[in-house]
Image (cartoon, rainbow, N blue to C red; front, side):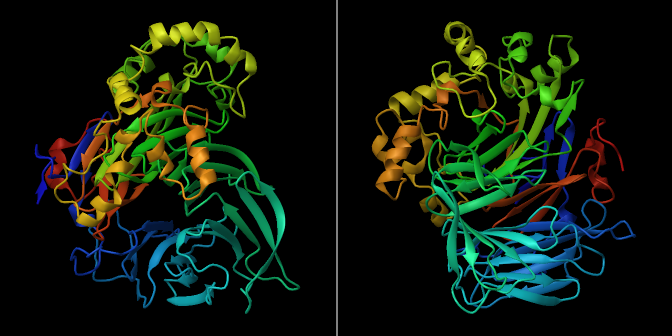
Length: 575
């Protein structure tokens, strides 16, 4: 069933993969699932999700894991790379009737060895607060579904708060709750607090304190995921209408937006320093957005179907030999002057050229690498490096208007006449990644590229092939395919928006941006992947069959994979 190290056939599941830092290995004894280890029949069920918390246990084994499979919710001690998983002894297990868990989140502030606060969202719209250590259910929010009747898509504790949490629904609304308040016995009445382009924020009118404190309505269609910035001040929202919207959370003000190349956005995450946002979705791409410049700076092509999760690896992301971080926003005039744009940009994803640049004595004042990963419905894990050659290049859009945000008019317009010739003569053939011009001609000119297809994946279920409709793949977007673009939108306004945004700073054309290629792209499951989490000594993935897998980082295999020690990377740190 599995191929050790990955075989040559497309359908074989890989159990290890290699990056520049060494070999990542699947720890088969660290697999978490339902106790019977039987693959879950995922037809019609909600995605498997995983949450972690550290309870600061003095024994040094403080990690706890929660995951949902169908109607079931499990809570275990997570032993990671240290010891094999003991599935016979869950700390807590719950089976729900009439509704299914869809998402969950621990409060890291209040977690202790004796008590944890776990929020669980459900398919019928309710949110439950439970303590799986004490085995208590303390509160149920939206119990009568008077606040929202639609599925909960994302739930998160507000960073730094012991009592506030935010809940998103497939209705496109988000609600701010306080655990101390009740939800009332009648439907809430709202008063407009703030309104902007395609969003509104309402307060709840009530004589006594009640939930929700606030209601956000964002975009059109479902709000699929949101993520708080590392400092907790900003909120990034990925919506089914294809828009990424970034808000100042406290002031409820729109900071910037971005439009997917095609279809809805399903997932979003922040870089560890809050400078970049990566989003993924139904266009099969990962899109990198600069927070300071409010513009798309790169796209990544590696998946063959919808991207379900994106996540930054805080352990592999690095900034070296640098001045203060505020100096490398990628838009400052001095960087346009200092950085030698042509050198070494032959492949945007080339780890080899990146390493040579890091070791060379060129004029770059800093060396930056952001590592992020993505998993998708194509059962593949992709790892990406966002490097200085992408972060510090001149914008590929000399003709377009300035984005809202950090770049100065002079740095764009002053260089536009020069950079337009540079872009055509130098930038296009060499620095853009290999095959970019071919893909662009397929996207923009002919529209017949089989860019996104599931035909190579025999193990895919029919339902998922239906999910990924052929006319939803990027190969069908061309200059003549405005009709197909318009099919995405449920209203005439949205149709007009989609036609207007392509080729603007909201949604640059494919040929106007660097196209990243993945460092690693491996099939690691039989069913669609729904989880990717980077931990200190491993990364964790999960698929819709209900298997939660631990991949040891190089040199971190611990006690479990002694049989594979021969392949350990010398660059890893042995624990």
